[in-house]
Length: 247
Image 1 (cartoon, helix red, strand yellow):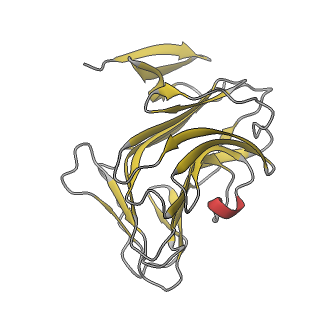
Image 2 (cartoon, one colour):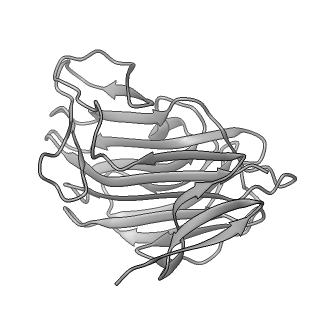
């Protein structure tokens, strides 16, 4: 049975899953930056026809639509623990860009403030879809224009997901996983103040060089999901969590 453990980092108390020390569940302290979305309660509903640039529970939602009025978002009734279902409009390249309002995550190598990002999610289409998921610079077209961040990325026409460290459009990547339709994945990123490590379902990927850590800009939890074909592709989240210990 999974239990919760805790330890002190930079004068803050971090709670983590006992069998996965990198999986931060919560953090308490005088200078904790915290984003926790369990999708159990709140107003996440987006009806077909809602305009671009609306907010839901601290997220700015920007829609990409060839037509108009097709995007949908809702909490899933009866899902264990709460789920968020995103349904794209039905044209190729339709989709949604989601970013937490306010860029507060700072990966300065001088400050060396530890940070965590994690999400449990699935997508309905493994090949004909694009996504970006992680901590990124503020931008409403992440798959096309992200220039700074530590994140996971999948391109249209491929099932290959990459882990990316990017600074001013210069990036290093490592293979993360092979996407599969309707399959839950836990994707996590941990910055220890010096290095960035990526984890997939609890297993660490090969550590990348720290050269391109985006240490001169502020980042925010981000997700963009676009269709790669003319169909109503979906993404479902169980949870998204992000923390930084800025002291």
